[in-house]
Image (cartoon, rainbow, N blue to C red; front, side):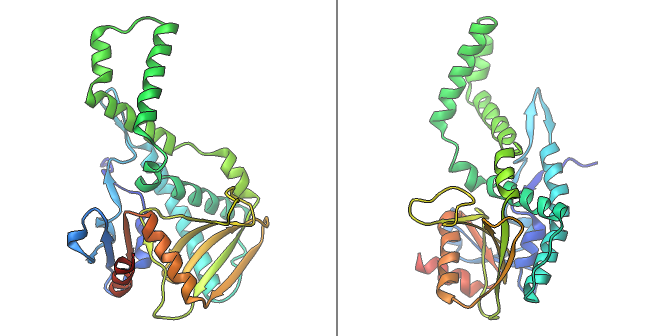
Length: 282
């Protein structure tokens, strides 16, 4: 088997839903503003090489990427069920196992993207944590040799340790968050107007909060994940409930897409005009 090298932090099965009639995405990358709004195939966007690979002792471990691929396959079926039901104006009636798959997919999609990770990881915190770990090792076991210390504290050594720590943290199952999600329901927002749509960003999940409320599960905290140009799903605090909302508020949709652009390095969608208008308005 070939070792996977291109690790898509936004799954291709999700990106394909946002493509135009030619099977391509219109996108804008804040790191390459000179390119402007361009089009690309789903397989060529929202990925980094070996992003979920742990490399210890020169042996690459891609088990997390393999796990995500398997989870995406299961989530694809659930997402299709949600989209089909929502477009028909009815609840999807997810089974317990399907809701568990959705919760797990949402949780990992929330934390696995470079934009989400960079907002949480501080280089200064990493340096401090590494120094504390080395001091703890020497106190409990033995002093490091000069060669060991030089290897660990070299730029390449620190980069390897930091990357491995990032991947392991990304793969943490987050049982506490999972417990919270298991006690929630879902609201499905559906856009009917053919000239209006959601976009998708490199920071895929959007959290909208009311003043003074920040905890997942509180009434004023909304966690959204767009799953198609005309469908987005929100966490609601009512356990087991499913609600379908026909979205007629163009202003809310515009603000929502603007929030995705604000929190993401790259945004994409099926309409070049929509992406261009969001970029020009920011």
